[in-house]
Length: 222
Image (cartoon, rainbow, N blue to C red; front, side, top):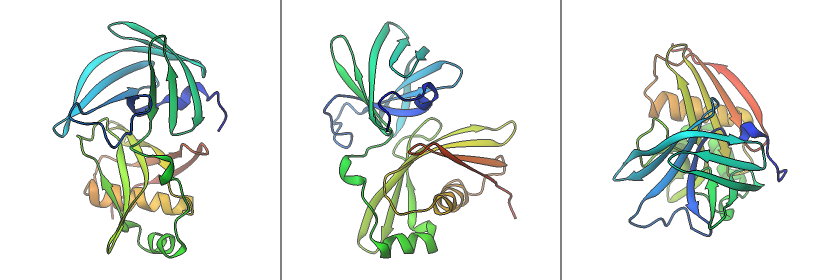
């Protein structure tokens, strides 16, 4: 990935952690999450006991190199984006990271052919996990079959209930799945099963955050 991302690449939900922290080992203090919106506003949430609490809100600017957050205080970070799913924020006193899910480098591997084939045939083998409430949160995609449990990706959702449009920011971790398969995972595992076929979704846009390709489909209940 280019080290200087496009300004709109910050859109959506990110876990916010001190640098060198394992996102899966956050301890009793829980975890924090930023939600950056296209209108230039943000919310900072704290996650504990299965729910998010909004701790702060304000405005931000991001030019692809510097992130300025204007909340209770104003903070400026230099952004280093060596991976599309993990950005380093270099601050005056401390460094932090933004991550698109509780992933580590070990999660970014090609799926064995038999596992990739099973997911293509039966996308509902990939289950949706979200340990906090869903309105602003990050969903984890986990492939489960017999004794196998393997995270394969994560995503966040923006949903306009007035016009039914849903925007999905997808972070693929596993390699070897085609765009059509990711679409079926969102359609069948997330919308049909996890969300129980919602009637306030009409058009879904899936943006693959790795390559910035988008796929649009109509969600029509039969």
